Image 1 (cartoon, rainbow, N blue to C red):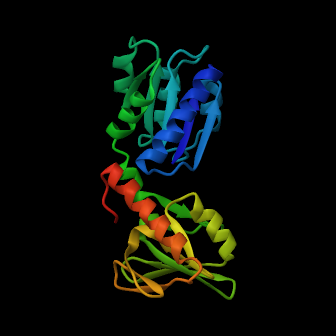
Image 2 (image 1 turned 60 degrees about the horizontal axis):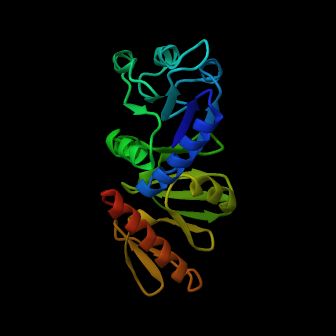
Length: 242
């Protein structure tokens, strides 16, 4: 998830970062980036449509308050989720006119942040999350079944019996997918999407499509543990594997 925070209090920024990092991990969401800004001007100056999935705005910030900042953001992006963080609810009416998703009242606790994450419906974001490759091509993360590396080319096997090819190394792919979802290198040059595994066979895993993906003997224990951890996170969040 790509997150931006604008607040003139360094202490509040660090507190929010820590709580979000723990909360997102607990709910099973990715944490791709967290950009912080000391005021609304800095955020607006670098903002582009689609740059962030979630933006946290302190309402009381210097000359340009959170409401003004949100107004500028909404002129470019109607889809990004806006969360207002403030010690007062004086601007509640204005915030909802800007289609704010939540009003987080300071000082907030870990429980408050987790309640916010559970109520703002991030499932739609999660389902549509994309991964972009160095050649600017992209695909939906939850469509990926497994990947294979051969002759300097990655073949990405997708749902619907489709394929997507990119000319990068397996190491590069590991770095890209490592921050995007639950993927595991199960044997040399092969990564599997943990959410697609339905059973463990003697020397492979069976996917939801019925396909068998090879697993090296050395990696089998680690893969079992990674898959178990994934299932636990999924159950804790109340989400079914896709």
